[in-house]
Structures are given as structure tokens and as C-alpha cells.
Image (cartoon, rainbow, N blue to C red; front, top):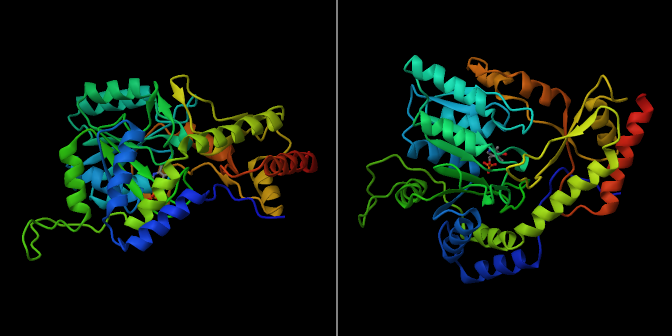
Length: 377
Ligand SMILES: *Cc1c(COP(=O)(O)O)cnc(C)c1O
């Protein structure tokens, strides 16, 4: 039987045709007609006015922080429950991440805790230069409350929507809630270009500047003239062609991932000690990954036993992100709260969630999980 991966790429004939068209046109460069078109289509898909296509989501986070003027000595509030790229980007600009715990009802940044943290910092005159929110596993943060807290203290919000393309908040697409939004097209995301990312915003001047910085910051001269440090962060035209093919099917990809979730909940929801990542009432989650919480006191098999049983059956599952405040590399950073994210890490398991999964694949996962439990109990 074939290995079942956590979130493998899902390609179709459109991607292949567009890639070959790009190849045959000889636009084999980090610029070209597919890059321009992909940017227009991504802006439309995220409900934003402008987009810069980049080599990765991490590059988008880095450039986003530069655009917000974050510098050495500054602090940036970051959701602790995330992938390391979110916090690493803060280090790239020489600033210090300060972590904020998750809300147990959404798993995303706790809005009340954020507001209290900002209040405390306002009193001591040390507000962060920016807040990076993370739309975790395809679920938007509570932007009504987080946006209000940021607005109250005039701190800009950079939205890491790398996991949430296709999700919504109050009927608005994920990516449009922050002053800048970051997308990722890494191989495991809901749509992929093998590697790639984007920065979206309503601010045309910022996106224009992001394009300038991402192409080595070349000043307008016939020779190579530079007055700013530049980066090589542009997306290639070949990969943009693949991305355009992927984006055409985004709605079906979201539907497939939500169907995975529904079928896991149906097949595993009755197990004692099992629960699933809740869907917040303010939006529709893309369910990029289906995440379960397995309470070891009540379930026959704790998270690791389930994960190992799946691994033995050639099925890839992963623990929920290890919180940034527990990572050795960020050991010296402050954290507001932390126990919610710690519990989600201890008990959380991400199940195989690819949009190309078949019903038979899901049944295989469900049956291994159920038997793993029986073995141990
Ligand atoms: C994937 C991911 C990123 C990084 O995106 P890359 O394109 O791999 O650089 C950033 N933040 C989060 C939350 C992610 O899941």
C-alpha cells in the first residue's frame, strides 16, 4: 500500500499545461507574464488591491517587517503557537519576538491576552513595533477583537496567512485582515508552487517597494546602482505558472480538506478523550490540516502511541506545532501566558489532510487509529 503523507502536493492538467507554456515561451526568470498574472489573481483571491509574488512565505514575513520599519532593538508580538518561520523573520531584522499564547476556543492568538499585554506595555512606554498574527491550520484569528486591540494602541498587524489561503473571516478572504498579509506556496500548503510565497496589501506603495527590495533593490540607472540593501526574493515565472493552475482549483481544495475533517470527526469523534480543533463562529476554516486533541487520561492511547501506530502503517502524522517559547532558539524571549499552547502541543495530532486523499485512505487512517487505541487499552 502507498504511503499516506501529511499534506502532499496535488497537481492537475492545468498546472502542467501552464508550466509547459511558460517553459516554451522562454520566460525562465523571476519575472514574466505568469508572475504578473499570478499577482493579480492572488490579490483578487485574498480581497486585496496589490500583491508581490515571492520565493517563499518566509521572504514575505521578512519584507513585511522591513516595510513596517522594524529594526534592531524593537520588539514584535508573535503568536507562540506557529511554525518557526514566523518568529525567525523577527530575528532577521534584528528585533526580538515576544510571544502571546493561544485561545483554547480557536487555537489562534488570544485576543484578551493580547489586549492586556499591549495595555501593560503602553503603561511602561514599551509598545511593540508590530504584531504578527498567525491563521493557524487554516483558521483565521479573531480579527474583530485583535484588530481593535492593535488599533487602540496604534500597532500595525502583519498577518501570517501562510496556512490559511481559502479560509474566511466575516465573509472576507484570509490575507486581507492585516495591513500586510503573507501567503506561502510551500510543498505542503493548500496550493503549492513547490516553493513560493506572496505579500498582499491594499497599500500599493508598500507592495511596489517589496518588489523593489525582492529584486536586489536596483535603482533606476542603466548600470547597477544600489542605495539600499536588496534581496533575491522574487518568484520565478515557471513557478508562477504552476501557482496559477493551482489557484484555479482553490475552492475544490478547501472543500476536499473540509471533507477530510468531516470524515475524521465522523470516524473518530466517538473515541473517549478525543476532540478536534474547533471552528470559530466568525469564519470558515480551510482545514488545511485536521488536528485532533487526544487527552491521555481518557483515551486508551495517548498522542504519541497513536502517531507511532500510524507511522508503523506508513502513515504520516505530526504533533501540533511546538510553541515558540519552548524552542531552544527562542529560550530567552518573553511570553505572555503559554500554558494553552503547551497543552495543545502535548495532546495535539495533525492527521493526513491532503486534498487528493481518497475515502479508502481516510478509512485506513481511521482503522489504524481505532486499533492503536485497542492495542494499548
Ligand atoms: C509554511 C509557513 C510559513 C513559511 O512559509 P515558506 O513558504 O515555507 O517560507 C510561515 N508561517 C507559517 C505559519 C507557515 O505554516
